[in-house]
Structures are given as C-alpha cells and as structure tokens.
Length: 275
View 1: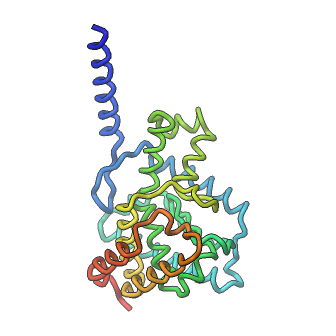
View 2: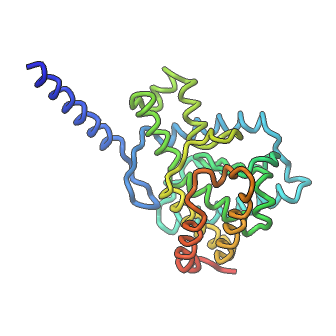
View 3: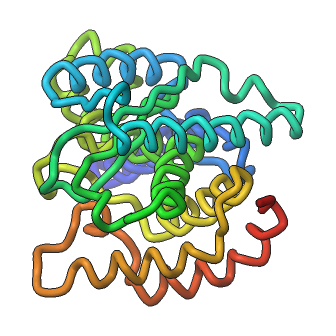
C-alpha cells in the first residue's frame, strides 16, 4: 500500500511539473520555438535596467565625446538596432520590442575579451575584445551576436531553468520578494554580467550558433559585409593560442564548427547585405 502511495505521489509530481512546463512556455518571435519562461519580459527588463545602471556606476565607462573606439561602439550599436527595428516592423511585430530602450557603452577592461546585451537592449562592450575585432565590421558581428541572445531570450530561458533548479520553479515576482539576493545572483550569471571567468552560465551550443546566425543577419542588414565573419572568427581562434581561453569563447562551440556554420549561413545573410 505504501509503495502504491509513493508511486502515485511521484506520478503526480511528474504530471505537475509537466503542466508547469507547458503553462510556462513562451514562443519566440524570431524562431517560432517554444521555451521555458518563468520570467515575463516586462519583469526581466525592469530588473535589467536596475542591474545595468548599477554595473555602469561601478565600471569605467568610456565617453564617446572624445574617444574614437567608444564612438565606433555607438555607431555600430545604432546601425544594428535600426536593422532590428526595421526587421520587426517588416514582420508587423513591433510589439515584440516593447520596452526596449537601446543603450551602448564601451567599458575599460583590457583583460576581458567579451561583450553582452541585457534584455531591453542594454549593451556593453569591453575594451579587451577590440584588439581581436580590429575593425568596425568584426565589432558588428560581435554586437549582432549579443543582441541576438537578447532577442532570442536565451538568458530568460537559462534563468528560468536555474529558477526551477535552485528556487523550486518560483516565478520571478515571487522570487524577488522572497529571495532577492539569490534572484539577483541568478540574473547576473544568466546574462554574463561580471568579469570573473566562470561566472557566466553557459549558453548551449545550439543557442550560440543561433545567435551567430541572426547576428550575421543584423550585421549584413546594417551594411557590414557578412563574408568577413569567418575571417574574424579565425582571428578569435588564434587569440586563444597559448593563453587562457577568452570569456567570449569559453562556453561556445568549437572554432571549426562555428566557422563551418557561419559559412553555411552566409548565402542567407548576403540577401540582406547592401553596401
């Protein structure tokens, strides 16, 4: 009898978790895929804005007023986001970008080869990645890639998964009120905020390649030649030789796989390219 009760209890739990997964799934506007989402976009954007402002207060932000590199980050960011907005306008889905307030900042950190984009369009590029990008076109691929992570809501997905594992599937609003410190830590890890190696929860290889695909499209649509992308990634590959792996590549697909896939994405990206 006891065994029957235990089996029934386990079955009920499985059914309950399955129902939670179905109810908590949302469809992404870019891919049409459903994914776990315990975090509403409005909630995550509000949290993003707060954390972004806090990050900037404690970081050395380079003003574009007198710095050519910071000006380049601003210029590329504006082109990429204009292309994103035009794309969703063409798809009659402007509402997907509701709440986005684009912001682009270059942060002085020569040892961190990385960049990221929070929900709502809050972007940071570290100076450490610029010696590898070398030019504006390569920077466009990097920023396009990071913007794609935000649009594809990859961070939302992995934060939701972490909330299931660590907070028992608590929705964000309840998690913030009951465990604000734990929720903030999950957010920081999920979106790669911080400079310590290993702090970022890994995107899956599938997500990374997905971000590459759409990032290439945004760059091409913004007037940057997508055929240069594989050259940039070969340069990224060489930057790892004999040194600790850059954060930007730490959880990513193998270089050979990435370069191969980018070449496969090239014909589609070229359709969007206008000099």
